[in-house]
Length: 323
Ligand code: NAD
Image (tube, rainbow, N blue to C red; front, side, top):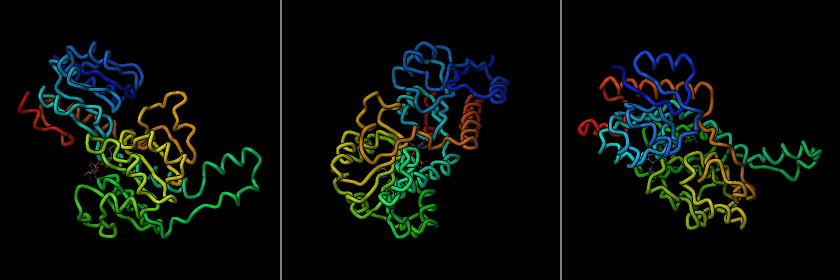
């Protein structure tokens, strides 16, 4: 009998056909439609899930899924999954690292340029018939400015390479202090020193209990009043209430956010009216080529796990010992 898989995102026909050669696939609605009650109702006889980073897999969900062997996340982040609970239930958790790093880094530099050159504000001025007001919108050179990268993993390093090409100096804060080989131009700083010194601060940590609200009132207060914050990691890394206060009070000069604490934001969310903030709707990995590469890798992971092997991109290979 073929294993049964739940598809929490609707794959294109050729990918669906590939899955169906080895599995009975239960199609889902649109991406994003999966809530915890949906999962509890759907998982009682399912062997695998092609998931994404907004589907909540907690201990209660794993307890309701006795046959489940793999959660294959379409995304590198897996903060939607209680990995310890998955491991206790013998469920492999897989992700899609690497294939999206360039796309996220491209967007990050795009947001840095947009902040430095007032791209969003000046675009609005053109539409409002204020073409000649450009002088009030004089921006900043990136050359010679310092970019502080918090979280120097795959994406953080791809950002450093791009910033270097723009003539920026770069530094990083992470749990290690030696610059990896090939990145010697990027100097280690403590989190506090990085925040005090940098003209732009870009967040690339994974969201964990340690990094939740890493940027809040205390850390924002360390930044220069002329500095900008960019977040293409996870909304939960920033205390959004503190950020809105910092933007209103001019503690920092501005911010660009691809990710929010709540996505989409609630109507009337204070971040929507905060000054000097650029908001984009979690599009870090959203290019045609990258999304396809992520999907192919997520399906590889799903099928390899259902054949009884451990996919290379497994975050808890120790789960097999519990299966
Ligand atoms: P990665 O694991 O390669 O890098 C994360 C880095 O953060 C690691 O070097 C780790 O040591 C560091 N880190 C963890 N905790 C830290 C702490 N307390 N202080 C300092 N550094 C710490 O991951 P990656 O592939 O570079 O992805 C990073 C994150 O980007 C993902 O976890 C995901 O949440 C986010 N992401 C967002 C999008 C998007 O669409 N906006 C797309 C892909 C990834």
